[in-house]
Length: 146
Image (tube, rainbow, N blue to C red; front, top):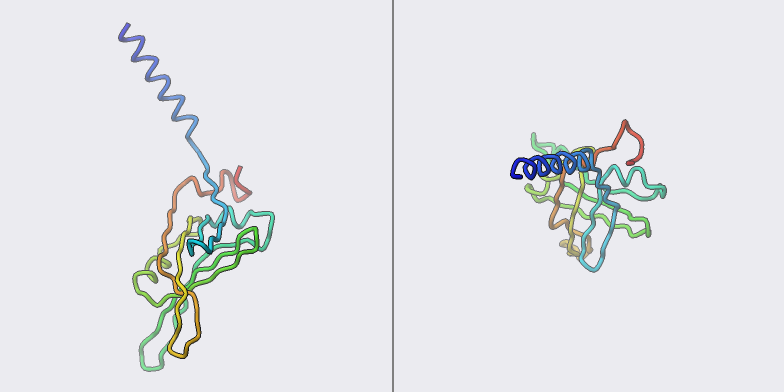
């Protein structure tokens, strides 16, 4: 009886693994002004029927002219409802987080409204996170997620 139970448990494990193999987890882009956060994965955004939807982050480095440079980063997103947000940062840790992003990353970021020295307000990135896992990759080739 023990051998039969062990055999059934092993068979169930094999089937459970097969069901989860190649799993996809598309994450649509969402912008939430109440929580001052946005998230989504780049592949799902790219394959969204609404061509206005996107999410991503980038870096810009400028020559200071004195042999040095200045780097700032930004994140931006537009969801299917047209909610549009972008934040910027000079924080070295957040700059590193942006540099670590991959083409198929799930991205999440949060912001806070702040004012610069002249009183102009802007959105400052407070948190940037990412996850690069197989379930964010396209199921086959470079077509839409299946």
